[in-house]
Image (cartoon, rainbow, N blue to C red; front, top):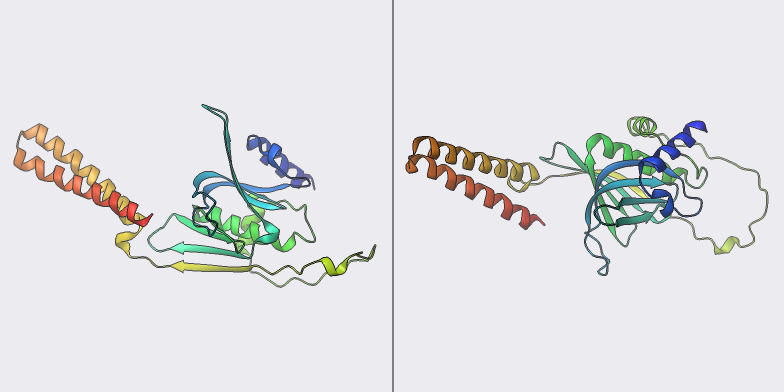
Length: 248
């Protein structure tokens, strides 16, 4: 219990202003830096959002959070209720060696969370554990080490638990059975020429060609030597920019 309290206090002290935005009885379980992309949604009234932020997992919600006061006060908070989540999928795109993507959906909208592989594995394991254990252990907290162990350990079916009945439910018919979320892993294959790695290589290579062309032009004074490199670099940079815009 002391470890749980320390984890909660650490999150509340490290994430500025978080305590003011927690709901009644809500307890932080895990936080990590990531990119929260809620732009691909079926809700037409919600504006597209892609935000580098702290991803916070509590015993009630999963949300992206940023709060700053300088140079002006700005708050970003976009949340999904754990009780409404029905799909959690860990996605790996080809030719993206660093980042992985976690798809979380409640049936009405989809959120894509991007982070390095190790962190996204931790988040996937923690979200799954929080959803599955929420009904019986609503105040469980996860450290990064505990979530990593959960991500690496094989999934085994849990034994059913029984509890003594303290009081009869006055309205048993009013409760709706909760749908079990779907968990999975997905590998997405994309052409190399349209991948993020190819766009990055093309952009960086174009910059290098432009710098090299200007340097050679200045050193030798030969237009025939430096100008073709500058033109090739400019074409590479513009191609990378247009390809990136077309992907969006």
